[in-house]
Image (cartoon, rainbow, N blue to C red):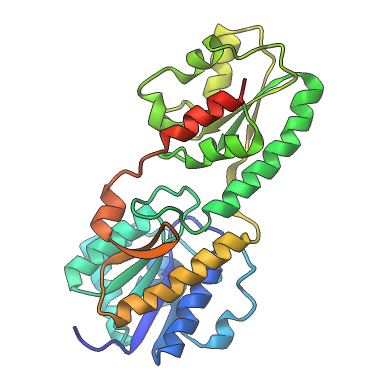
Length: 326
């Protein structure tokens, strides 16, 4: 493999707390290793539009505590076309960028894999997504912060739920994965979690009611993943009104609250470790892998496995939630 002298770094897709910590770690680790760093603004769109600047250690000072991403992020349909990817490659050639570090989720790493294969270009991915849905890593950057945000919000909603003796459906993010809903429910003492991994197997709402979901409780809170498979909080509330009219139902959709805020210590440390590991991987001639963490050890996960393999939910946690919600 040709010697790497200059790396580019970008963030893509939905923002996640800890992305700035990752940018900082990649930048400073690269400089420490004698590499030049180019910051690419607005993800793949900025790559095509040549929104690229030199990054130095001072560019990433005082950002570890900040949510969002200083490099901004954007969706880019043009990058999904061969012509768009060719434009991106030409821009990187002009800037003499020899390798790329991409921080993002499933869609971002899918684009990275295609680009890497088309141009035989070294890319390292960092799993930046609050959904925690990438295979091969125990946790993704931003997941812990989002989970803590959900817990804090549910704690506040419970005050109202208890005061009015209501059933609350609280919708959290997780279109294809129920990690936030399930672990958020356990952390906040919710009565149940309705997640896409189980919705195709059983009618979770009917099971909830039939298994002694008691009106006599002071309050009842159910976390719902926003997935169309679950029907979302609004859909479930409508079903309760029609099928179980005895319940006083309310809905709260947390939405983009979950993405924002200062990252937790865990996410800052995780992002820092992964960012440094990305440079280690490039220096070791690794390419087209995602940096993951398994049993507190850094691992390299091929893009094909990280993207294509479905990350399983821990079924033991479902049983734990059932036992603790009586």
